[in-house]
Length: 584
Image (cartoon, rainbow, N blue to C red; front, side, top):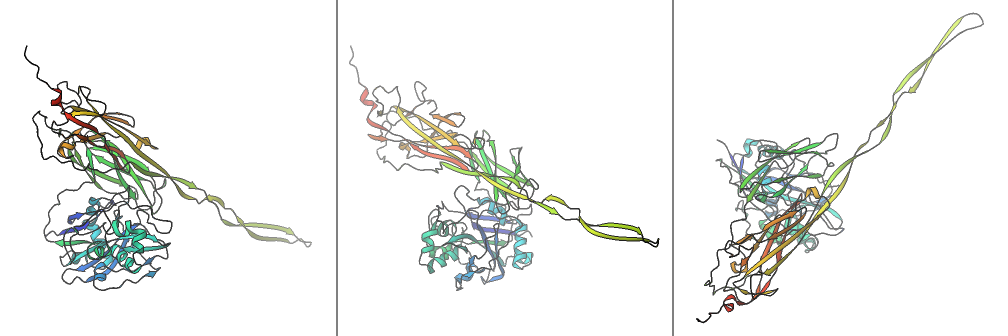
């Protein structure tokens, strides 16, 4: 009977590609995290310096079986302070925290790990961890390193425990620590670790992996996924994922996506390629297979121990759909093999026809929402160059000499001897060096709301309720790599009378280069078919503030977007402009 691997993990990750193999699992996953801040010169963390601690636990006794191992794509430096290979379960069973200087070892897996800890412009992918830890080859590798037979491991009597690890610098010293170890260590230094490194050690690290369902005595996490957590919360509930094995195979439902795009939009899809070194002697090529078309990115280069962001620009279909993007890497690198994109249509949710006797006696103003806002992004490209190193290659050979002569007695003599001659040559035994060229993009925009000019009693900033308003949004993208960036392509406006939800207007767009302009579409309820939105007749006097989310400015490092607002003042209603003329 086929066995199932039920993965109970919560992760924010970016996938390292898996060798095609039978996926033996179905997932139950959630995630959290946030921005990491800047750190200091002596206490900081570099994105990508992460890994996982893997241990196998007997289901009935919760005892750790075999070797506990650390996996990472990055090899930390020497003299790392660590705490041994101790599982979270062992700490919770009474194991003490014992710092060790030097001697730390970790394994670089054949199939590169996904990104474990999210970092700013490089959020990780939930689908990546699903693909990785349900890959049969990965499970077989874990079994081998732990010291177990594969069939024994997946028989149902054991579970795999996965903990996120961060390699950080704290107080000028290099550390390797799991989320649990960070919390325990913070207690020994009276909160100093949290003070300097809390965005990592008490937010993104513990929230990188957590349980969605209770298991092995640990609860499902139901707290905040976007703010710092306490030491006790980490020790009791966070920084742990569990892989369990059952007896039935059911395909998982796709309810998480790597990207959400809008229909009929230029977008950019990116993957991070890593593994080994890619240079002109050993180049990497990446292919994206999207909607029946193959996009090829050649000459992808990066140095040993680093990675390169690779992207493709394409245009989404005109109808909503779920698009599965296949990624193929040719050469020595690895990358996320499957990307899912949910393509949605924001049009068609326009407000209903306003009528003159509308009422809303219970209306209360709500706070203006704030959707995701990212106004700048950065990325870069590695460029290899050859560092010459001319070396003389010795090639010593014997050079024979012969001398013949006749002595005074007429006897002939022959002497033969040799000496060594270096017939070598100069050889360039150089190597590839790499320069990193950084690029960036920033989004700026403005929004203006004005009364419709057909409103007979309106001023520049004031109108009576029941009349229309018009809107303009202008946006501009500044970038140092124009070919890798799109303009802002969509803007959606929400209105206070609907509590900024339920109904909205997708604005008409006009794009020229990296500049965009947006305005209301012509309103079918307008007598003059004007691009207007009618304020409700019942809207109270005071500020009337529509809210616009400007989005779909795509870069290799993700989407740029902005929250915009503008207001007019409502004073009176349109009934005040009506009068009944007496009959003649």
